Image 1 (tube, rainbow, N blue to C red):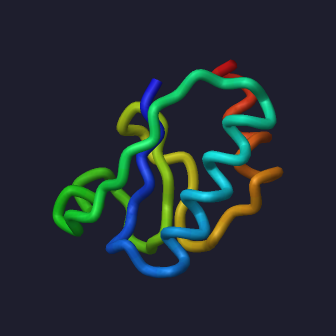
Image 2: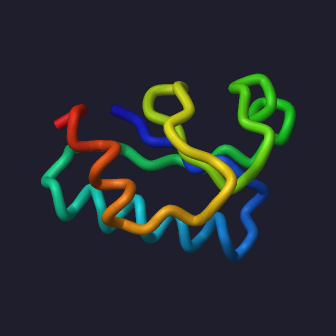
Length: 79
């Protein structure tokens, strides 16, 4: 499984990445985290507001810095 952090690399994107990594650890999920900074690619994925994150190319959340708890709740079904 690959979780993609979607955004230009701003402070909010970095905070979301930290929260995603924390959530992965909390629920014991095996996942690779990668950054997607190309805005054309982010828009092609259907994300209009960053930061956001996707699981295997499918957007899960966007438009704010989700807490580790919010991310963990969304990732739980992938466990």
